[in-house]
Image (cartoon, rainbow, N blue to C red; front, side, top):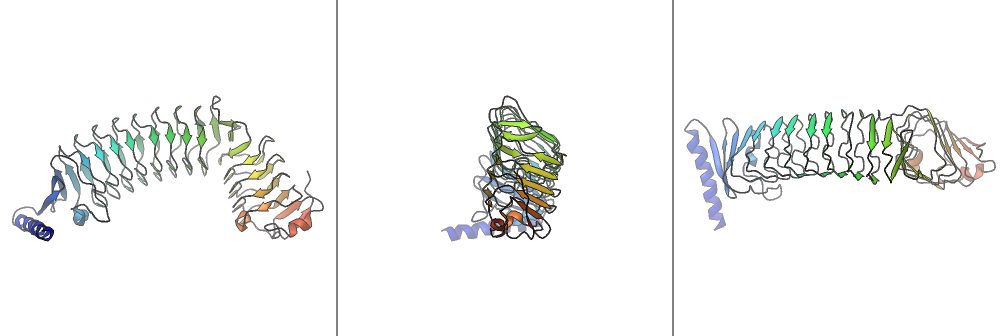
Length: 418
């Protein structure tokens, strides 16, 4: 029975094309779920009409019925009565330039316009309340988008790599900025985050290179890993009073960032001279990459140097005091100007990649009599161990000369003083 239906459907499609080629336009048409659709092959207009939801499609076993014509589609008109745009509905329509969405639509599905590389602008009507994950993923020509205030959910990766998007106003009903939302939107200059937002996810503004300022609303409680990483135009940022969680390298690789300020009422974090600490100042979380100082002595209150804390800093000299017991991964990596580092006597282990790519290092002073454990060969990766002198306490040269990670230094001198 299903074979007979499939043959009839195929015959109907062929007949539709043949009938229309005798007139003024070549038109392909069929049904999808409870809806009907037609594609004018002459001008590339795809029209979807009917009442109710559009099916959700996928690449594994249920492609959109117009998928084989995707390169011919230049515009999409969805008629009033259709209530949703299905998952992957217009994905990979690489020549799609315009879309008309009616006020009956309430949901735009997962990857609905994914990789529509010629879509320049789109207006979302007030009826839409949900835009799901990846909806405009890799729409790299999308320069403007109008988002009405009725939207209460913008999914993960929604504007991922929309590299021509310049300005976005996030609707007031949004309370979470989902992961990777504006990832690599490298022309984005302005983002207005509504006051009700409580969470900023991971990699949200990663590599948004034109973003020079950002106001984080007072209700925000968490900022995810790499949330503002590689925002190379960002100069200052203020952590509001309710933030209790800041992810790894949230403000890393921000080359112009000179200060990370913290609201004085914040109970979890503090700043000193623009440097981010936990409230008790026992953990140094982030030294701003754009800070111009050439030397820095870590305060004696600090016991932990956070992951990537000084990464790509401009420091030439850094002193880690005896209070510090832990230096986490990549803490002093890619510090291209760093010539001298002093490590206090309480450090027992040095994490993965701590001095990786700090190629200017000439002197490392280690004050511990017993060599701190080195994570692996990546700790000093690209440090020239033939020219960088390792300074150790008097009477400890042999210990370092036989210890993993330290024995590779050609010159070990016994002159590191407490």
